[in-house]
Image 1 (cartoon, rainbow, N blue to C red):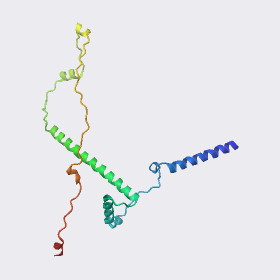
Image 2 (image 1 turned 180 degrees about the vertical axis):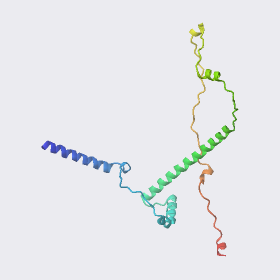
Image 3 (image 1 turned 90 degrees about the vertical axis):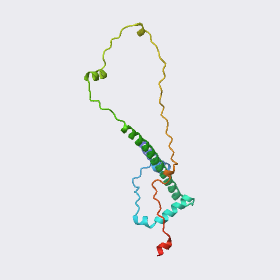
Image 4 (image 1 turned 180 degrees about the horizontal axis):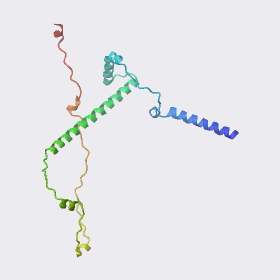
Length: 184
């Protein structure tokens, strides 16, 4: 009875320790918490704090330090935004090249040959038995060392620092009229 109780208490203690280790020493990203609720932003609050948020983001971008969590979140946002822009720019450049290739392929005219010969098609598809005369050439094995041109694909170098990508998707600011004109 004592051995069973010790074994039971020992297993209980070990499982508790293992749960504590998993709870405190693992990365919280890998823990499955079903209690996490999705953050919802109230549109009224969003409109109310709009100018302050934009001012804070400009300040952080220029080097002002706020809370560590806020700066970390902003840096994560900037990192993700840069990667997103690079990805869309690469996609657009590659798509432009594919569009050019597709246009070139569409301009090629294939002549319509309506003649169809069944016997020629059958000879192309099915193997025909060839007579193989036995000569001395069939007993000699000649090796030809001809090298074929091997196509080695290369990674495409894409220049993402072009001027057309610097302000892509950014709306131009409307120029403010002179204040004198507004007074009149």
